[in-house]
Image (cartoon, rainbow over all chains, first blue to last red; front, side, top):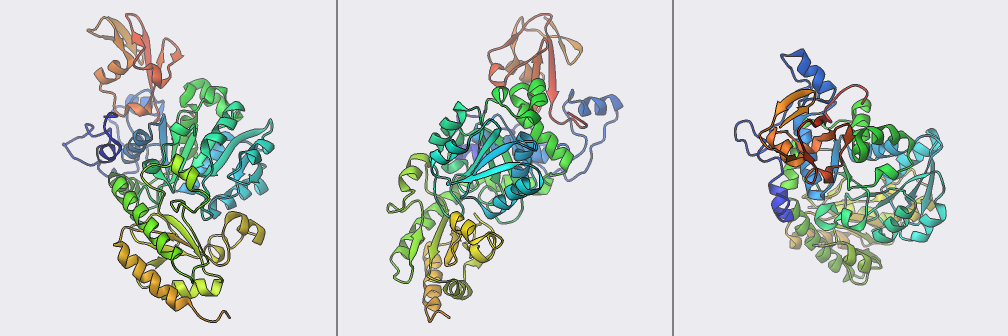
Length: 417
Length: 70
């Protein structure tokens, strides 16, 4: 199966032969529990000595099917599917750290991730350093004996900077520190994390992986990190028992103990999205580039940011790291919050909402929404400027998207109040 | 050959068999969810295709569906 190309593997999961009645998609095992006639069987399942399922908070066939599928797309060691991207990030931090530990994070990250790390720092005894995400020197300066992880995003949201992943993973490996990358905005279609030395990938599968804006989900993938030489104390007993599967085992245990499970129905929906991942993302990338070029041609737009524009500072690094496109995210700056709001209010086709990677083109004003609780300095560092609109292109006909943006731009012009 | 799998003695027709082939022979569902211990030593996944089982070996399949503590 792994000899097939990526698009084929998206349609044909490695579980294809595992059917009861010849069904061609994994059924939705919408059940809380699984009965076993023989109490020894249930005991063996609980003790991990027999294949089977006991309780859906621990494991569910529909969720396991999705995990196997995404793991094979990533060529990973193992995957754990959870309720949301934030649950994924929470579990990763919990898996690797305990109070008093230290982590380094790019400051160019999704607002929700930022709030989460601040929560860990302020209330759970974790020391967190935020650094300029693109510069390996920033990470190097902050590494100390207690550092247990380096966290960053493959495409900063909404700054749209693209860090040089190989530089950062090379630095981290010299210190036996895992690098954890939020690849929500790239997916394995655009970025092959394992090839760049990434240790753990996580996704808000809600976004491009699922693609339909229908369900929340998060996924953690172990890309093959060296956990036996890892310094994290919470991992120790798991690596002693499960060797290099220790991280995945710990994530699964945390998911179970904390209840951060993915519903079987949502797992089904996300897996349905995986099947069309290359088609959707290719179209979203194509649309994003054309929309970015349109905005570049408009005098009323002060700035356009899209990694796929040759004029963009991230273009060189993005070209080296991504295949098949530069993602579906772009931003524009219109000069003021008021103009942004007029623009958004005038839209007739594109939707104003908090999501990414939908089939529909989406906009949002991050400064007044997702990043509203950050300080002005934090907002600037994250790229959430007062006059910035973040756009996630869908798969509509690009002429319709551009027509909607054009009339909205016209409507946004006027005296700044 | 006779080997023990999860404590039960089983007769395998092959004189020798890799872990990968043993998982397939035993029709282990979702092999990604299985860790394998051979004679008390946990194997890494990339050893499955190069490690063979022989007569008298003890193999433990540990599944990640278990409940409770670990």
